[in-house]
Image 1 (cartoon, rainbow, N blue to C red):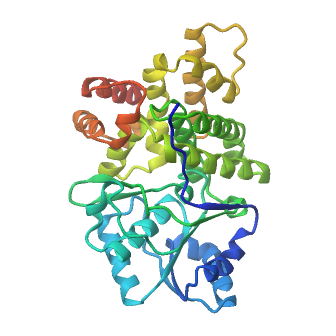
Image 2: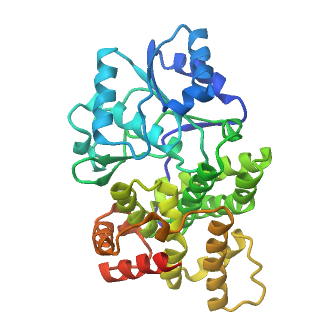
Image 3: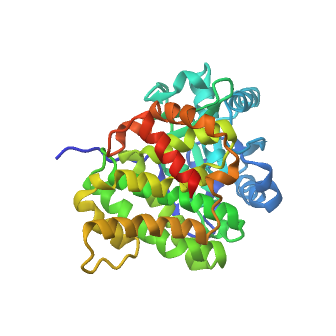
Length: 382
């Protein structure tokens, strides 16, 4: 048995962990930090909490609040230019996956120079980056615990995956209280992103006993809490969702992912579809496509999803897993592919681009363009 398990960040989990930002940065010897966020974080007052903790430690700061969903290479270079001009020597990212991925990318540019496209792939970042504290405000991407940054190449309309050493942050402050007022749509889409991470990591070609255990725990937490978090936003459901998201990230950081992400990336890059929505659209049909390869993993997966397996035969059990995923998406109002108005003539292009995605290599079943077109069509007809 051979495997590698790794996460880049130390995790601090619990309510009000945000107030520890300044003290933790001080431990790195930082004097001036860049706060990476979007304008919603300013409006919600979350950035003010970070600023208060920085001021207590006499740490200067610069705010970069231009991050948008599906962040682009152009934006990363703008952020790096500001960071260089202001002589910052650390980062704080507060927000969702786009914000945290942006902070990672800007950090890479500030220390390694060049263009962000130079670092597409695995272990292309050669020089250690500056201290980075990440504070997630959604329960989905788990960027706070992964050595991955995803940035859209503007001219190529492609989501670049930048992964490996020196990409991740140093500390993750996981504060479930920050997600209590998250809108239903964002809760739903980011939650399905987390569930996709866990399921794809569990069945990945690079899965290990460690990632299996963590992924199954993540799936259980998310299946128990996502619908409640969307509809009622209780404290316990929010706490379970953030823990489920973090553990899913721990699993996929080592096991990597599969065809759901391979299809989701071009869909988001070309049509600006939210990443979690894109994942949720394809998840049931990729699971259905892959399920013949699950073998002994099918029953533990079904059990973690809350399915009573009893004396169900393999076919019925497989159908139950797929139907449960479809039912969950419907219960939390995930948009259907057809509603996104994607031209049918683009299906082949999406499939061809998915074949080139990094996640395709760790999918448990080999695939081809025709099979991927079939999957897209199935999701479209839902």
